[in-house]
Amino acid sequence: MANWDPRSTAAAAAASAGTQADVRDAGLRSYMLSVYNTMASGVLLTGIVALAFASSGYAAQVMATPLRWVIMLAPLGFVMVLSFGINRLSTATAQALYWAFAVVMGLSLSTIFLVYTGQSIATTFFATAAAFAGLSLYGYTTKRDLSAFGTFLVMGVVGLLVAMVINIFVQSSALAMAISFIGVLLFAGLTAYDTQKIKSMYFHVAGTDMMGKTVIMGALTLYLDFINMFTFLLSLVGDRR
Image 1: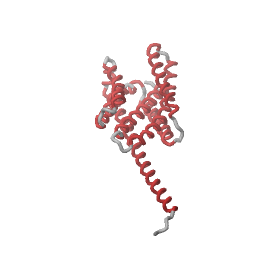
Image 2 (image 1 turned 180 degrees about the vertical axis):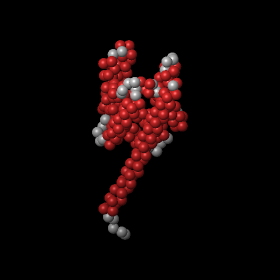
Image 3 (image 1 turned 120 degrees about the vertical axis):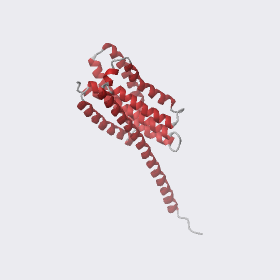
Image 4 (image 1 turned 30 degrees about the horizontal axis):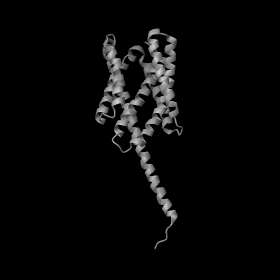
């Protein structure tokens, strides 16, 4: 009978654990890459639609009619359908709704090309992209649990929405400036928080049918963080025509 060597058993167990960890890490990287690719593709599609709609001259015409409210509120409808109905939707339907949302969002954002100079839009976009990349990387790599900040950030967004509604009636430039500044900070924090949350979600859905749907919802979440940070920063530092 061969002698049993505890060292070889321990080495085999360690090798097995290392292999499992490598597989898990590779799966996580692939999952997050899918989220980022979907998010970036959505932002690109939105930008193309916004620029094309503004350049065609239709944006100026449509925004002067009551139809502008349909275009402005339609993105919210898509977000609500995806957020509350994702469990009942197929992955293909969720993907179709995400791309439709990106198109409608492009129509809604086309007005920025009528208000701000092209140079300031481009500069703000790249500044936002750089900040987003850094914040998302922090959320992905940090060992610190950011969940404690989640409630605070969400409450801040709710307060921000209330302030925006109030400012529709009071038309205060000082309040508008404060809203833009706070909005940039809130969505910067949400970028890191949501990235960590999306990363954590992978370990719950890995190997299940929900992975495709959570990729879409993760991309939608980061898309909204990016677009909101961009629009608030643009209203804060953008050069108007």
